[in-house]
Image (cartoon, rainbow, N blue to C red):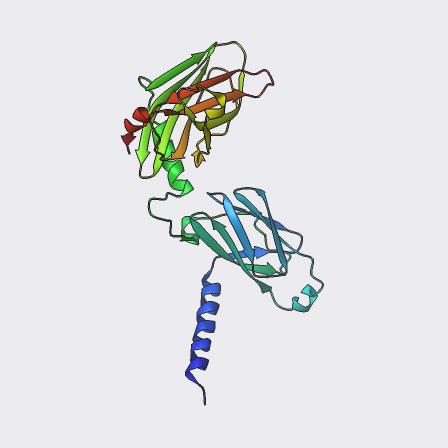
Length: 274
């Protein structure tokens, strides 16, 4: 007599089998490599088969390859065999594919696969948290706005910085900043450092500096001849009137130029909302 537990196990097995069969299929052949392209940085890859291996040549590219298998000849009488499930996870979604090895020598194998929205299962974010794709979307909207009168400006030698716009959305602060190079030489931007600093430093031993890391940057640092504009996103913060938010722009050369842009808490309170 079959017990209720037997029926439950059978049902779960059937559902899992149906789910795997309904996943998008990724066909492979021994000696081929497939690159999975993700719209967001990949945080993990899970392979349910010992026949596959993977690595991350770039944060948004997963490289999947089929290992050499001496038992593959046992399957030559069938057109293909299942290799298992490939799971790719980011900060906001997971995507799954059913890997299949094809034994048809005339069948073309894909060299790349782009993760589409309909391939993904969203990962629930915490209250007020935004995905990287959402931060990028909002930053692009902000970058599309024409800079008008800067909210803040600083100049050092032939280099100047301007805070074009300041926006806030939930727990996030968006800073639209432009750098202008008035010299005849390229400016090779190496690092952009954010920190909370004391406004008045009476004694060096009492000075306090707290480093801050942006959660998103629309562009990477690079060289520019005349101007460079970027959107930086920080988690919204509160600090006392005795401190200010300092943004340092450092050039790559050992004796390179540098520039600081400072914002008070009052400046941050004036931020517009999306």
